[in-house]
Length: 218
Image (cartoon, rainbow, N blue to C red; front, side, top):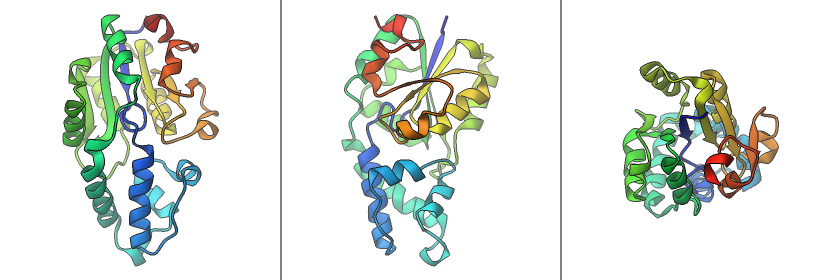
């Protein structure tokens, strides 16, 4: 029986895919590089983000990774308050809380920014912990996941991680948790289909698909 649900934030609960692509295209245009569309973004995006920037053509002639990351984050943060959470998110979080599951957010976003957005959307009461990074370089969240497990000594077999990228699957495997992937976020079905876990098209399918959450959402 599950005891915990660990949620990814960006792309899973927060519907920010199109904003992320638009902000990146502004950065690429400023550097004289071609735009990307949704298909290319989903093919190229990954962790660590430094490597993703390189795949898009950003190199020494355009500055440093730290400069690009700061430019991206500044524009993203400016637009972030207007980004919606997915329509089904609040109801699902409420059902799982009422069913007795404890919920956590594990994100590659900066901790301060994560808290601000969760509070803005009035979702804080659903989560017992918000786990983010200490900087804006989005190198990944495996260390944070392992540290959380070490602090609390949870049974990994009773934890479900829900995310939208290959990295989320990697984190789940590394800590021994179950995993469900959402194919409407930053990685699409093509990239996620090779993972040995349940995959759904969107959050609404958690009610009906064969996942560990179905019994809790009936």
